[in-house]
Length: 508
Figure 1 (cartoon, one colour):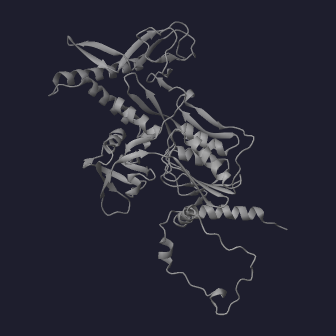
Figure 2 (cartoon, one colour; figure 1 turned 45 degrees about the horizontal axis):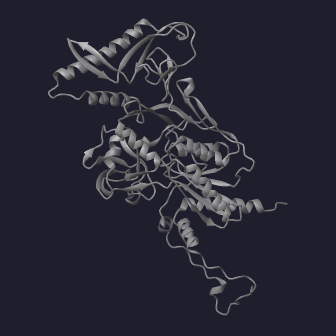
Figure 3 (cartoon, one colour; figure 1 turned 90 degrees about the vertical axis):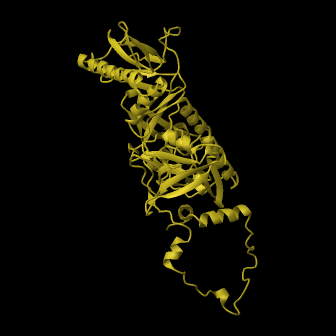
């Protein structure tokens, strides 16, 4: 789900700036020098780019500040203003405008006034934690569809997803044009089996409208015990009216990599999502395909259709397996340290097999990183349909009460500098997906030709030394059925076979 995308590094890093003051500092899940035993240690560490003394305004998240108003004490959890003066090592390049400082005080005072009024005058007794969590949720929701506040329960849900097993429907969602929208169903899950498709709009969950519902709220409503039912109201382009679909929840154990041999020398690998261990599973799948073909593949299809994304490090590692050096992806953000570059490694024995990568409108985020990198390096032919266009980086920042922020911090760019955001990846060869038998139904019955073998008295067995056709194994029968039932896979396989034939051709 769109709520799944995260940037994983050795430690969570995020750069804040005091509003309109331009002061960056770094948030890590570690202590900083000089404050190990201090109650002020909230996980903040000043950056060393300083030159002169200055007074700073830092917005912390872990202190409970008690404020006195109207002779009543109330606690303002999570939001705090800490004012420090740090000596000659810490300074702003440009002193802040006093009027801007006044604006900061003004809005914080406004917030505290509203908090106090609600606590004193609301018809029912209020829960401070709920009020603060709600305020933070609203703040993040104002930014973009992918930034969100994760309560401790929400954060645990996110961690469960990236481990690859959870109970639910197997559906990836995002907010598109203010509507809860399906990115793609995960292969083999209840959502996939029920026929839910990419770009379907979810209008209701168990008769509750999704308008204004957060992504994590929607995820939680679709999760539940195995076998329990949930009803979705779906609107799909082309339908006269919305339709209701009832689904039974199941344990979603994601096996993100599947592979098979489509024909002698030609392999197929499907990546359904980028989870922990995806790159390692891909490496094993390719080695098995090579072993099954005397160590050499003549062509490989990498299927990223309906792959909603996942972990950035896995997308980078997957791309690295097919590239022999060079840039894979880079990110651009407002702050200098949000700008990162990910490079492929030089290899003694690079994988040089000809490749086709299949994509469609359900291919998003990490899938688009892989497709964009292989396309820019001319390492593979991209085939299928325009991808989703989710090219933003969400950094998960854990907080000390078990909650977390999921914040958009930068945008992805392909090696050539193309932005993926809202654009997606355009295939080199556009091949729309058609249902099995659709072309035959449109064109009518194919003409039947009489062949030599149909004539009475024709000669037989003129090549007695030629071995009779071998009986197909169950795996070969399954592969043939799969290829015949998927026009995009069939087209990709034909392209790779044609490439191999052309490579063997002699031109004089």
